[in-house]
Structures are given as C-alpha cells and as structure tokens.
Image (cartoon, rainbow, N blue to C red; front, side):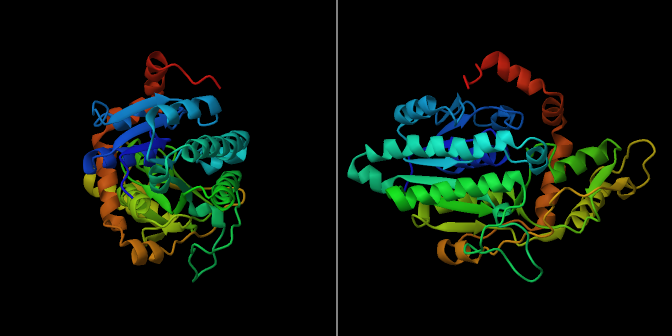
Length: 360
C-alpha cells in the first residue's frame, strides 16, 4: 500500500520522533503527530521537521475518545501508526496504573475510533487502510540460552509494562479477528540512538560518565539484550506499513546481543576516545561502574529472530552495534542543550506555555 497521510501517536517520543524525521525526509507522506507530551515526549526532537508543510502536531491524549474521533475524521489518514505508550519498566513497577490507563485503555479507545472511521470509508480506501501497532519484545518474557523470540513465541510478560503491552497486542489482534480490521503488529528489541530519553540505559550511562557520576548496573550486569539502532527500526516500521501482510506480526531486531555490562564497558571505551578530558577525580570512565540491587522480576535475556521480516520484506539493519553506539555517543556529546532542556524540564515548561494540556 502507499500511504499519503499517516497519523502517528506518540510522535514526540524517542522512536516516534525518529520515525517522523524519517518520513518527512525520505517520503512524500503527510504526517500527523498526536502526542500527550508527558515527561518523555519532546518536541525539540522534531525541530528539523517542525516547519514542514507536510507535518502537523496535535497535543491530545489517545484515551480521549472524542478527541481521537475528531482528529481521525479531520485528517482522514490512510494509515495509523500507534507508538504512544508508557514505556519504562522501572516506572511501571512503582506506578503501574498509568501503564494500564495508556497502554491498554488508550489502545482500546484508539482502536475503536479508528475502526469506526475505517468502516465508513469507501471500498477502495478501506482496502488500502492500515493500523500498525508498534510493540516490544518484552511481551515474550525471559528467554533461555540458545533460543530466539519468533513471531510464534508464547507471551509471558514479567513486568507491569510488558503485561500492558501484551494486553494491547491482544486487543489489536482481536480487532482484526473479530471485525476484519486491517492491522499490522511489530515487536522490536531494545532501541538506542540520538534523542533517547536520559533515564534509559545507554543515554544514562553516557551522561553520568561525562558528569563523573556512578554508572549503576543492576545485579551482576549479565542481563542480555538485543540492541537495535533507532534509525534501522524506523526504516523497518515503514517497510512493514507499506509491504507487510494484513494480520501479520513481524519481529524487528538488530542481531546485537550484549550483556548490560558489555554495553557500559563499550561506552566507556568510546568515551575514552571521544571525551578524553574527564571530570575531576576520574582516571578511567570504567572506574565509575557500580553494581546495585537487581530490579524485581528482571528478565535475564531477550533476543529477536528477525528472519521473517528479512525474508519476506527484505529489511535488514544497516548499523552494527559499534557503529550505532559511536554515532549515539557523538550525538549526546554534541547536543548538550537538548540534554539540559530535557533533564531540567525546561522544554516541558515551554510546552505548557504554548500548548493547552489535554482535558483528560
């Protein structure tokens, strides 16, 4: 299918903003960005496209049924790419309610508004429409050594976050099975790259090291994740949207299994090269590594089998872990103003002055 207008939820987030930058730069699509602008939503990540006549921003909550119906009717999208979600595991452990509200109830509300819109379209536009739900490999739970997550792996979520995403995946599949609603689902491995919110592992370690702060690692640091450069991910998302088969799930991974300790150690090695002038009292960045109590219910290993999307749709990652990590470290070193505005909350104050908060 060829999408002319794509409505994206959560477009001010890390992956969403990367997707929008890609769509504006590499396609002729018109993009509608719907984002509630919670703590992790940052319009500064979209400054390069903000003045494009093909980009429009709406500050709304996906859980507001009236707002979703109004915006979908107004913009008449050819596709919806649903990325809006609460996404931080630690936050889900201390405050799970927001994850159920956004990831489960919000997805339901959006699905219903989109289904009603789709059912009123003419036959040609109905056949072309797609609802692409973007999810995570964490829905599969823990993984034994020697195995990979496939699209047929049974769900076994371990945290409130992953449980809420699993629930939203099930809702999307049910809307396809029950109503014939044309859906696509993707489950991706851990993303990293420019504009990543500072509480996540890789940006947190970069920024802490540059500030001479401790680099806290859960447990013994042997938890394994498959890392995916965010720009590789958004290319995959557009590939699935435009060439994927309705009703299918596609796993997206970077073929980069690394322990958390390996990730942090590699970051320290890169920083030794790119930022040799260390903070006072720091001889080696690796000396800042500190081990802390493990996270409750912490999954030991995630790893994606991305052979289906490679075989059927022809996508494969362009970045290795080292090349992507080098680009990421350089970006954070060269974008201290963005980091400061996010860390201080200055951008949120600006948003509240210029955009009315959603009613809900």
